[in-house]
Length: 422
Ligand SMILES: NC(=O)c1ccc[n+]([C@@H]2O[C@H](COP(=O)([O-])OP(=O)(O)OC[C@H]3O[C@@H](n4cnc5c(N)ncnc54)[C@H](O)[C@@H]3O)[C@@H](O)[C@H]2O)c1
Image (cartoon, rainbow, N blue to C red; front, side):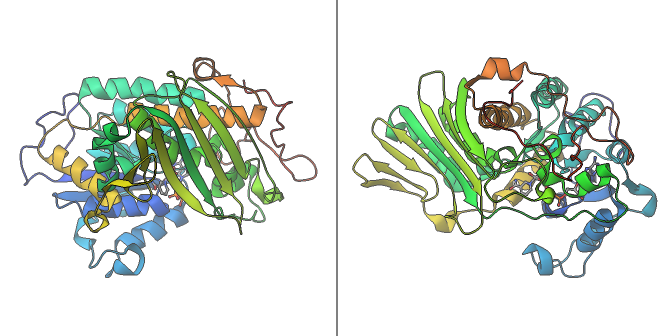
C-alpha cells in the first residue's frame, strides 16, 4: 500500500494491509530492530534497506533471511516470509536513505546518531511513521532540527518511537507509577561504567571519511562521545522521573587509557553534576575503562526514600523495602516498543510522540559533554543555542571531515580549561 501525502490517522484499515518497513542503517542494532518489527505480530514486511556500506547491508540482509534466526537473535524460528527486499530496493552510500524511506510506511533509523536529524527530517517530510534509535543527534543544531521535526510529526499525526527502551520496560513503568512513595526527589545518581566498545582499525586505501564512518564511535560528529551514545539511557531515566531537564551542568572528564590513534577524539570518562530547576542534583558518571567496576544503573533519592532502578525496588530512608517489582514479570522492552508501535499503526492510531523527549535527553548528554570538554559550568539555554558546525558541508567518500588527524596521526583532544564549549 502506498503512503498518502498527509494524514496518517486511520490510514491502515485493517489486518489485510501490509505495513511496509524500510531500514536505514543496517548494523547491529538496525538488524535487531528490523527483526523486532517483523516479530511484532502485525502484517509487516521489510521492503527496503539502506546503508552507507554494501557489506553491512548484505550482512544484515543475510541475518534477517536466515533459516534460523536463533543463532544471532535469541528469537526462535525465522522471519524469511517478511523480508522482501529485492536488489533494486537495496541502497548504498550517503543518499540511499531518501530512496528507502520513499518505499515504506514506517522507517527504522539506526545509523550512528550524527545522521539522525537529517534522516528524521526526511522521514517526516515524506510522511512516515518512525522508529529511531537514541541518541537522536550529536550537536545542539542536530537537537534543534529533531525538535522542529518532532513538532511537525505531531501535526501530521505520525507515530514516533525512540529507542530509549526503559520507557517500554515493565519494571521501570511500575517504579515510575509509584514514584510518589519517595516524596520529592532531591538528588539522583546515574552510571554507565564498563569496559567500552569495539575499535575499527584504519585500512589501507581508505579515505579519511570512510575510516571515520567505519570507526564512528570515536568521532564526536558521528557519535557524540560515549556520554551521549550510551549514558543517555541513564540520564533519560532521571529526566523522566523528574519530569524535566537540567538547567545547567558542570563536570570533569578525560582519557586515561583511550590513547591510540584509533581512539579518535572521545574521552573514556566523564563525571557530571547536573542541576534541575528545583535545585535538585543529578550526579552522573560514565566510564569506558577495561578492568574497572562495571555498573549501569539509576538511583533517585527523595525526602521519604529511594528508587533503586537496577534492584527494581523502592526503599525507605533506612533501606527497608517498601516495594519490590517481581522480576519474573519483566519484558523485553526492545520487542515491546515495536509491538506497541506497529499495533498502533495497524489500527490507524496516533499514539507515540517520543521525539521531543529523545531530543531533550540527547541534549542533556551533550550539555554534559560540553561541561566536561570545557571544564566550565554550562547553562542549558546557552548550550541549546550553540552552533558547533562539526559536520562536513557535503557527504561523499572524498569529503574531508572537519576533524582530521595531525601529521603524527593523532586527533586533537578536548582540554578542560582551554577548550571552549561553544
Ligand atoms: N537502545 C539501545 O539499547 C541501543 C543498543 C545498541 C545501539 N543503539 C543505537 O543504534 C545506533 C546504531 O548502533 P549500532 O550498534 O547498530 O552501530 P553499527 O555500526 O553496528 O550500525 C550502524 C550502521 O549504520 C550505517 N551507516 C552509517 N552512516 C550511514 C548513513 N549516512 N546512511 C546509511 N547508513 C549509514 C553503518 O554503515 C552501519 O552499518 C546508535 O545510535 C546506537 O546508539 C541503541
